[in-house]
Length: 185
Image (tube, rainbow, N blue to C red):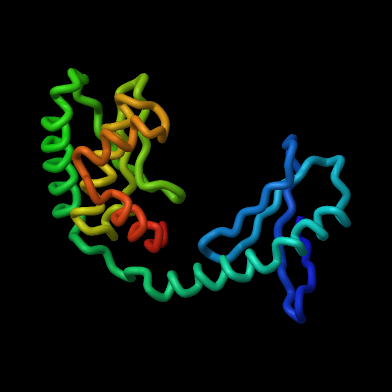
């Protein structure tokens, strides 16, 4: 359900979704849409007040996304065949780096993902990479592949996980920060 509040003469629209959640959750999507989820027992008046208390954050996030959208690459950096070729080769190269950990070679899948660059199913030994990586530099793609391989060993984002990542990509923090400015399509 669509709702709106007024803040300093500006209208903030948001989509309210009722869910079985303990807290009120607020998300600003890259397209500027504001989503709020709350339990059925929470009144609309209370939710409006909550959104109003976050108005400064919402407007700031929307402005940041708007600026980033202007900076977003409008065209892929590679042809489809170059992209698939690079991914395949880099996947093999990174697997060789991880051989010392005595892991099985995971299956590689490519698919469109709207909210992440990749995922790792360590139980099924499958690494899935987003086709949106076609908008990333080779350095960024390599980082994502190392990141997903590291999940085969450590299944969370703990200090142990990042010590493995940093072993192969020492400046992963810089790369990750750069990637936060790329809009997923």
